[in-house]
Image (cartoon, rainbow, N blue to C red; front, top):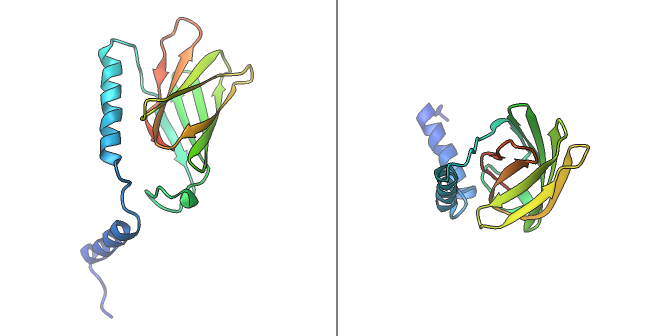
Length: 160
């Protein structure tokens, strides 16, 4: 058997992904919705500042799969100014549970802004912890609303 060229090898890999792990249906329209929502937030002159995504780790079996069997628990970490936000996302059937920690602990309301328009919320405890169960699958952003005079800020979108 002869060696494959780089282009031939990449074509085989592309074919395998297209056949066995296609992009989820509706991905483009959901991303467009997120972009519209972000633009609308900025259009209201709200001081919305995106947090910087520092790390994301997971053990997903499929690159873009939507099958529940291939989803697993993963963590995300965001930093905004002096606030460090760590999230643990645990898919459970048709929903997910988000556990979070805010460092340093401070009074903050956390809202999950879902691409389907639903909003779930929680208060950060004195220890900096919060949890939001039963979040539907899809694209979400977290909006953190400090209880002092600082403006709210929003994470980049991520899919659960």
